Image 1 (cartoon, helix red, strand yellow):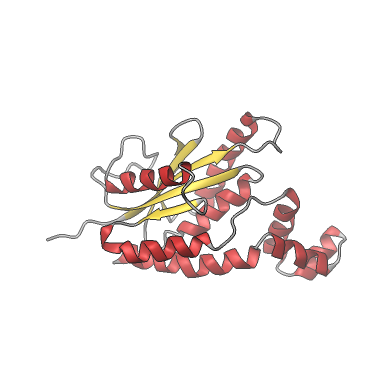
Image 2 (image 1 turned 45 degrees about the vertical axis):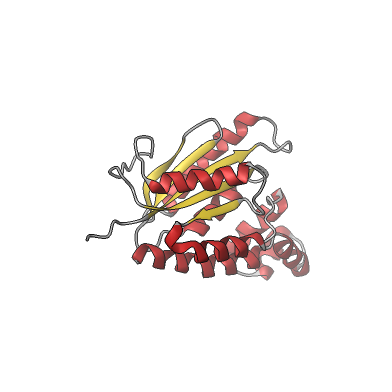
Length: 216
């Protein structure tokens, strides 16, 4: 019996922040983030991210390195101060892959992604990212969701976003401090308050594991 390929479906929702001027700025920003994500993660995206309702959006990931958590964090970082939450399903498709968007696609991966997002929307989830991997991976699903719930998710402030982006670009705290005319200790404090190193470690642990599921 031929084994059907399985994929990751990200169904996200952005939540308006009162720190922003109006809701339209959030929708406009999300469209810009779509373009950024498509350019940075082209090899992982099988069906491009698009709106599926006013605040919900969706994209299909696969390939040898789907980079699921890295893409999730890119959305969350770039959308700050708005919050973005994700229901992530893993499973098969019952329709062909359509690169332009998921509108006419279906399969168990869609049902699992929707259930995961609904769990967040119900207020029962302990973090803004929930996985539904399927009955054959119940143990892995529980451990993964438990691990993610320990990470203390919170949208970045404008300052945390600025410092983190510079740190990724320049590579050292000293260079960031010089660029912003602040102390290295101030840079370190901001990175730690943003939980930058914690999330980087989580991504480096989780994404390779998720890649093994696709390969299996």
